[in-house]
Amino acid sequence: MKRRQFIETAGKGTLAGFASIMMPALGRETKLRVGLIGAGWYGMVITEAALAVGGVEVIGVCDVDEQHLTESLDKLEQLQGKRPKGYKEYEELLNQKDLQAVFIGTMPHWHALQFIAACEKGLPIYCEKPLSYDVQEGLAMIKAAKNAGNIVQIGFQRRQSEAFKRVKEFIANGDAGEVSMVEAQIHYNPSIPDTTIQSPPQSLDWEMWCGPAPKLEFRPSIGHKSWRLEKAYGNGHLVDWGIHHIDITRVILDLEMPHTFNAKGGLLKLQNQITTPDTLDAAMIFDDVTLKWSHRLWGTGAFDKRFNNGIFFYGEKATVFGSDNKMMVMSNAKDASIQEFEIPTPDTRERHMADFLNAVKHSDKGYLSCPISDAYQSTAMVQLATIAYQTGSEIKWDQDTNTILGNAEASLQLARPYRGKYARPSM
Image (cartoon, rainbow, N blue to C red; front, side, top):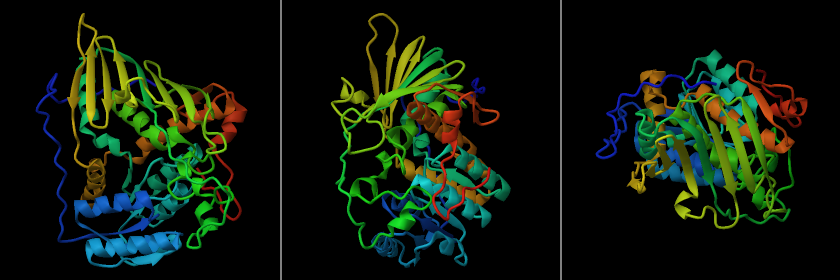
């Protein structure tokens, strides 16, 4: 897909004295009453970010782990002075009187059902990334949000990074020349919890935790916080963490969807520990740009550890490297040296949440920095690259029809069957 025209308003070549974007102030006299679905690690991270922004009262929390629920209620009572109501089933939370918005911080395999139920209530939604577990769930979520007309923000917080904003400005001003190749990577060594099959913690309802996904035998390595590298629940490193780099690359270069995907890799070192590739190289090909992804979950990573986590933009005039808090530039001029800029960013989570809360407060979607249609494209990209890896085939994508062309085996992976009593949402 060709790049949409980008209108840049910042001054050309500005690399010093870049004014930080002030986080909008929210009125504290009338607090927005919100509920949280999924009170584990990141569910609480985004909820505490909302409380830090201000103008919010958490009135309900849902979690299928009684210990998580109790700990979150205790923490929120300490932070805001009022104890929210606790629920095990998200439907009960969504029926809570006076609920005005909802945060979804559950695992991706639960996002679609919880999101669509909140849309049917007409509630504004802040949902963590990835948007969905599979591509067709994402399309169903777009349909639900369109029908509801509600305000939706998806948690791609790196859109708030000042370093990546600076990279975008540099490239948009033409200082890198035409960028035709991008390489993104995150190499790290994960700490894998116990892989021994055992009984779930007494506080955890494992049946409800698994929900519409396959119910695997419990082991700590696929449970709380560790599900990311389990295929049945998290779909792997590219989908979980790499998706941030894929998303911000789309933002920086103003890209929509690639037309072709290729991927190769495997489990080279972490066999019997995880079920997704510990080594992966993927190519996502647009008309004018090729975006490559690489990860190794073992070894030393990049030769220069500064580049273990970040994105290279290769232009005719310069190569630009961006990461969360850093920008580096190497001109193609003879004897040019690397210019390195440390660009710290105030809490990106609070900024991202502030955009959502202001959109709700003012009933104005113009405040949103990651609407659902945009989040769908970034999520579908990593899902399609994963399908290319899993099928060992090249994927040709038709953005107009949201279908894979000429590959029946790969097309089957656009929608995973739901388990038991759960019914897939319609597109």
